[in-house]
Length: 388
Image (cartoon, rainbow, N blue to C red; front, side, top):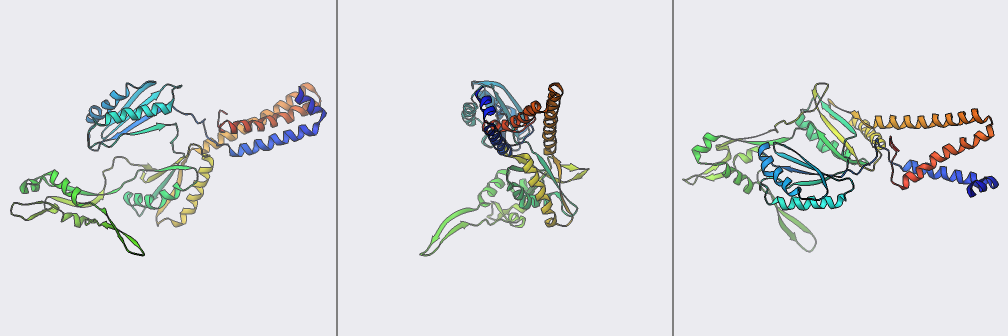
């Protein structure tokens, strides 16, 4: 009752206190992140392993099963699921909701380290990552051209656009979908190899031994220090064609061009990205978990507009999908609902009380209470979303 007594006896104090609550509430509101749903710490850990060229059955028996055997002994696990396909294995470990996820991640890393000695030597090292529920792209930016093919578009996106969008404040990563990379093919001819007694191991060993570039130390004098490196001799397909893969019995060298075709091409297509039936690229913008996606989307759109004048001839860049539009409209609808609710509360009180002065009290306290609630939301680490 002391607060109400002070407010009645000293109305100026009550007014100043209410204004302070509103000011701090508005400052907290400006600093609160905005997202569709609350930031939930999901107790999920995933293990991804790549093994180029391995079939799904080999991935299952030699990688997935080996890792699952080690993971099954960890305490606090609710469920283990796995997905295995050609060249890739992903295991998802879900812990109990009240389990310490830091301890769980540590246990998973230890189990993976124990199982790694039984994995194939050619397989990549398993990658343990913690799934915190984020990582979903908020925007997709399409890139299309009537002059460049997909390989050229991919190179342009990597060299020019990816870094520009990565520098935007609040952007976590930029993924490229529908990319097609340039590679050098060494197409072996089994007949020519058999005729010259060359094996696949001979070619692989020659490529590993000769196609290297390594540091060679430093050259110093009284003024400067210059690094020295062993320059790679093989830069073009023509250079690789004259790579010596083996020496014949008569001492003559056997070149790579004698047993294989060497040429530059595009990698085999495992996926494609289309918009309105036309192949193009898409840049997926993933915001940081604590960033305001509305600000990120605004900055991305401004950058897209500013890049239009610098694009090559026949190239188009536009925002194809923006999930923040739904977030913005949903939050705006919540604000509208709160405003209408406040008016209805005041109107109903006035109808039942019949006195404007008595109705003035809830007309002031309702917005003050709502704005002040942002102070607590800010200090407790909440965000503005459809639930809060």
